[in-house]
Length: 407
Ligand code: SF4
Image 1 (tube, rainbow, N blue to C red):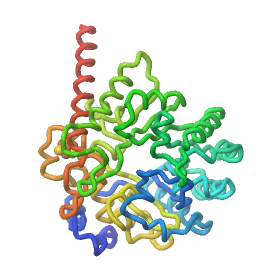
Image 2 (image 1 turned 90 degrees about the vertical axis):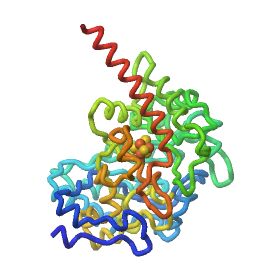
Image 3 (image 1 turned 120 degrees about the vertical axis):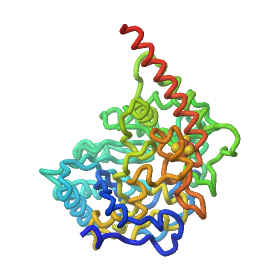
Image 4 (image 1 turned 180 degrees about the horizontal axis):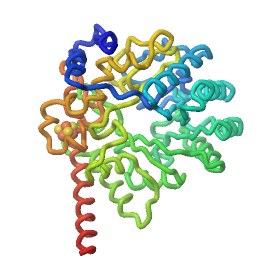
């Protein structure tokens, strides 16, 4: 069965992982990790025009060909496919993230339909944990009622203090959105529906000011995102000199780790701490754990991970569609396999690196260089090394102190 499912990469992709021999991996005993997280692009357009957005401002402009909204027959099929995949792999829980574009543009009634379709096909043996990622400006009472009724936890994108946020997260007319996002966050917090904040790092923003501005919203968790970029199109401010993103993150880490009480969870730091203490990572941003996430576009096609849209036109695509293929078939696609095979996917530089077990080569998207494809260290290599070394040193000193006190 598995042999029938092995596919070749898209013809225009001649770079690694195009040559990845999935048959050989299977013969060696490797088996894919089933998908546990599904990102549903319920609406493909956005009401903002953020200048760093990988969906609309970077290499892949495929969103222009997507229907605006995921149609109800597609929703029904996607829900069936998710239930089928979970049951086939004995999973009693899946994470489903309603995403976009801006998912709230789909409207409260349509999102209620999506939630109902998922519950109808998955209940009672597969629990669907529903989340939604929004820019926060459209949140009103109708959406709050929907979130409460359907048990949807909500993540909001906000970049910190007002001036820093408004430098990038703007309307098409240039108007900043911080005041609207703040109002949305206050509404969410009034009903305890906020799951976390997602902030993209800007070197122009002071790191500690940014962290403390995010804390004002009392988030259970914060994701600090490195801006997307590759060796061909490096992120802003990355010149090959110094470690500006590493230094920025170290400043936030010291403020966060040194607080007398745990103010929030910063996932990147928590995962690095888990890894330096010998555990495994629970995100593909860092570490060697297999990525278990699939994306479904509004037309029902299955994609790898949407950050690949920063790399090239079609880089995130697979030949699979939920109307005609199961998610299990996509599991054998070279691009998805490459994100599941840990060390075997990495460059010689990374496999020889003393930090590899913690770093894992960084986010897959950030490894891209034309010619060699995704078999390179991260474009953030030096910055990741700076952060990981600092976290390791700090945690090791704490562990040694606790040991000494215990003797
Ligand atoms: S990206 Fe750099 S720090 Fe990370 S494993 Fe590769 S060589 Fe090491």
